[in-house]
Image (tube, rainbow, N blue to C red; front, side, top):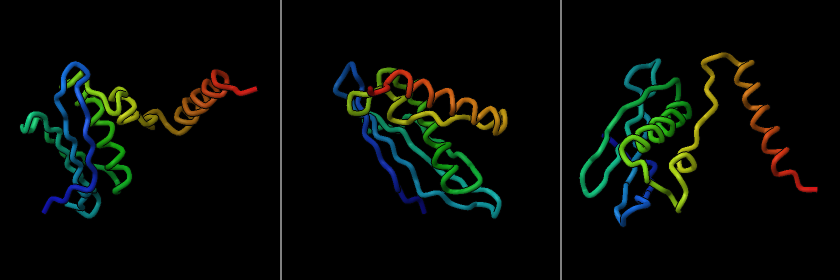
Length: 121
């Protein structure tokens, strides 16, 4: 049984149309894999449905956010949340595929950029 645990309503910048996002409770279809479904709906119609998998509930929800960001940008390029772009509604996580050292390097560069740009005297 699916149970929606997270919802977000977005708007299209060029119309009054709403986009509804639903994320279901993660589940364990296998002992070594957590899965989570999400839906993107617009105009009373389902625009996209997908299932993602991860190592645990936290990781799978983070992957859902990444998948939603990518899919929303494809389907609804003008989608906004509170007037902000999809990239803010579902921010990108730093990828780990290149290893922990690369992850830390990207994290340090981002932190330094923010500190340098928004330093308060």
